[in-house]
Image (cartoon, rainbow over all chains, first blue to last red; front, side, top):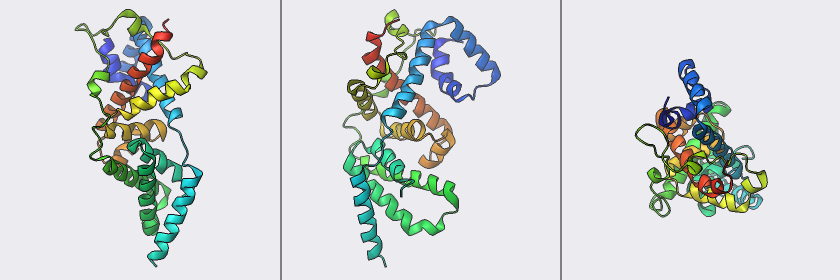
Length: 79
Length: 178
């Protein structure tokens, strides 16, 4: 397997655990010998995790209050 | 509303990148929801519907604004030599910042770099990224919510992650060479 194939074609499926057993074995062999691809895999995974953490925000309380008031007003109009 | 409020907000804010627009999207979504609540059969149908309506409303809000920050995604993707190895100097291709101490990884500066990189993604890529990597939906669920094919979702997700990785490597990689 080439670095280009590993990164562009198979990396995301590898993380999803959806590669066929042949390709998985090929990819894991490649990773044993390729430090740049190991670095790419590690930093790609970390990027995914950081995105999840950084963007995991809750709706602000004051927005929840405004939203409830908006809905009550609008729904009352529709009666 | 308790169950879905923050999900709608995260998706809307994630796509529009704007607090006021996200609030308007949430208003539209929940108003629609309360008017149609009796037509849903079970929570799974409701969840998909909410994500679909919220994503659509947020993408509509972005129309006309979408070229403000975007940079060409191609420039953010890894490049390769003819023999299939990665292009770039050795320090760059070996940069592994994944074991950077948490405090540096989660610092305001790193978050700003990541947020800026997310801002620069095309809207449809950002929508996929938020639904998959923040909300934790499957490729199939994202495809259904966005009305796209699964291969399109997978391709956009992978390219979005690679673009963000590139920016984070420029920021963190130089300080953490192996």
